[in-house]
Image (tube, rainbow, N blue to C red; front, top):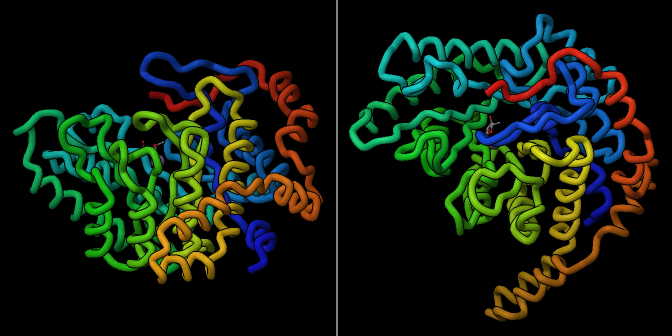
Length: 382
Ligand code: LRH
Ligand code: MN
């Protein structure tokens, strides 16, 4: 296995919203130099690709990245050296969606929500994006508030209408999340619910695994192995957490978990263009572009370690019931310092061996602070 060639071909997608201001319900801390519009967000995302070489696309979020001319935005992306990735819908910030969006008891509200999802497919057409990412904050807070079964029927109706609108080379990824903002029932709470809806719809509907959306103690790599086996793993929203949906840098809280996930991706044949490796993070207190660069490097390191697993030795130990031997094979790979290998690879890609140092030396951070004076800084608008 040519590990370097596989690492060189890695494709990690950055999220436009990571470059804007973000925070928690307690405080959104503004940072100097933050983009004021999607054009500036793309320019910042291009810096991540410039120094890592493996982050060539950027996911958009609508309406946070709404523009008058999406074809022009896609042209700008190309001009700065990136492409438009997944289009993220947003039916979680409108007052009409207090009791749900596509699952709302009122048909008029459901129609409005479906209208937004269909608009996102139009934006995919205009930008050349092949992926629609659907996350629904829909749920209820108190037993009896609404009919759990009826909400699933409404969800299924909406998903099938969106599915029918997809072009032949397009797909949607359905994202699940255990809780928040709903605190009793979330209508798409777990991988099983997302998988069942996608299975019913067809091959252009797959599941996205957001690594921050599980109950504590959940074995995420099992979910990855299972969905890959079913051909239903469409992608990841990578981040990490110590407690809930913390949206911290991927690999920061649990690098061993990220390694185990990447091992199952590789073992399951998912390391390639069919699985989207997207970051979904918020840099509430740390500088955003370096935060994204560090995150990409964390994924690279976990991937390199997973690619170094001696699969033959592992297979032998597993088939002979050598428990400790098998575990040792995996741990040897995990305990391998892959930073020299990645440094070499970057030099072979005509990049600086340490992207963090190279970005800091580029003067880009100072440039955007000096240039981006006035205007409204981008954020979640929550
Ligand atoms: C929901 C979520 C979803 C996005 C949002 C930014 O928690 O993970 O993927 O739309 O974060
Ligand atoms: Mn997510």
